[in-house]
Length: 126
Image (cartoon, rainbow, N blue to C red; front, side, top):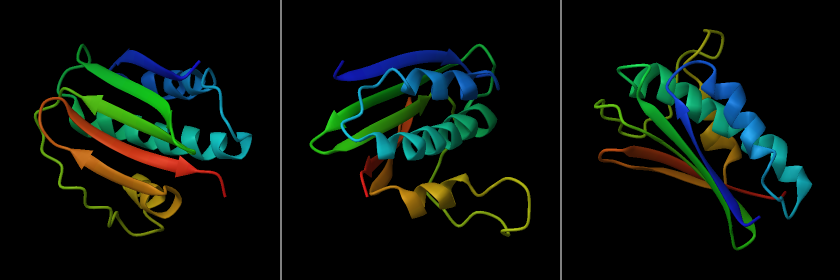
């Protein structure tokens, strides 16, 4: 399988469902799978908490191999804008640090603004 895509409702149940869906991806290097699952779950959490205005809205998860990396996109229908600020909150404060993880662990990441808004990252084997 070259890649996957899944639609989820914008509810908290989307987070573990996204992690499970990513297990269907054929990883060229298994060492990247835990990083992909962690970062994708952070982005799906953000889409549920900040991107969606209604639990009936959809979140799209797409993952595929691009060269020797795994590229993951999480898109939501929310109207909120996102500038890609990864500064987070205080390290000892709960929540708000998911994008700091993305910044630290992803090879590259970014935001495609618009509607739907897509936040993406690429993860390569160490």
